[in-house]
Image (cartoon, rainbow, N blue to C red; front, side, top):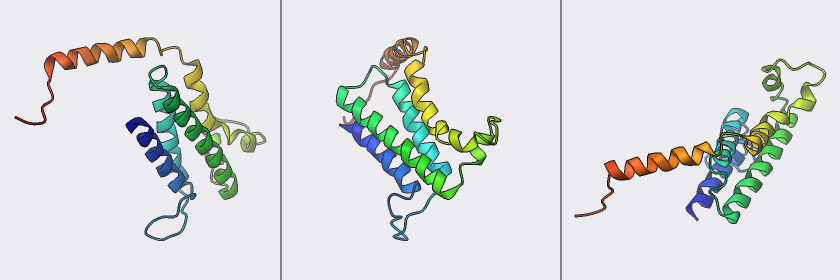
Length: 142
C-alpha cells in the first residue's frame, strides 16, 4: 500500500509540472518539462530497480502511471514546443526531431524491460540487507 502511495505521489508531482493539476498557490496549471521529466525518469528507475519484487497490483499501478505520464509529457512537449532541444542532445537529425520527441520519455520504460543487470541487483540488495541487519537495529522505544 505504501509503495502505491509513493508511486502516486511521484505521478502527481509529474502531473503538476505537466500542467494537468493546478498549482495550489496560483490555481493555474504550470508547465515545467524539466521537473516533469525528472519525476517520470525517477518512476522509470523505480520500475527498473523493483522489477520482480512487486505485487501484481503494484506493478500495474506503476506501469500505468508511467505510461500515462510519458504520453502526457509528449503531448505537452508538442504543444509548448519546448521538447525540441532534448532530441538535439543525442545528435538526431533535424527532419526526425519531431518524431523522436516522444522517445526520450519512453526509452526509460523500454530499457528496464531489456535490462540484463536485473538478476544481480536483487542479490546485491539481499546482501546489503543482511549486512545492515547485523550492524544496525531499529528501536522505537525503551
